[in-house]
Image 1: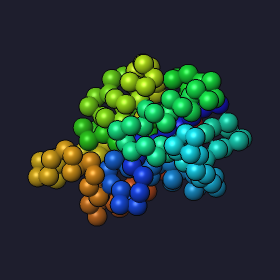
Image 2 (image 1 turned 180 degrees about the vertical axis):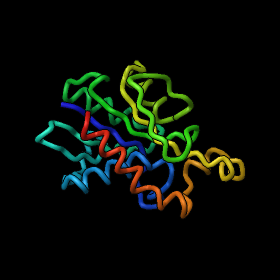
Image 3 (image 1 turned 30 degrees about the horizontal axis):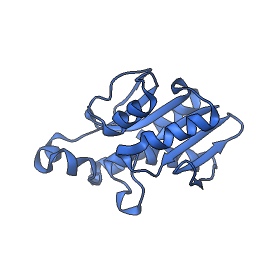
Length: 173
């Protein structure tokens, strides 16, 4: 079994914010592949399962900065290793829409990755970072408000092609 984790924050007020790009990517994938989300309180997560490919899609409901708690519980339950997951998250240091894959690496300032690394005890897990950079907006409102900000109309228009690129990546894994 493989686990694909999309980072984000629960609650409708966070829909279409930069920090919820991982959730958006999984929502896009599950919708186009006709998979249904189920609430799993024992994991503090929403999950969707693709039985054909033996993949569990996960949206932790712990809030972004505590995602490690939920993912650790899932890995323990299914007796999986850190290499069995793929994390999909936003990265404000990458150009908007750029998608970058790494087999492992540091948190790079991402608090969700910091939480996951702390709970797993390793940086050795694959991650797909999606760029959200908008230096003009970020310099005006600061990092905290930036990651929780909504996409601009121009960025919003580009989301379907970005999400399709991520979906294609998942299909090839």
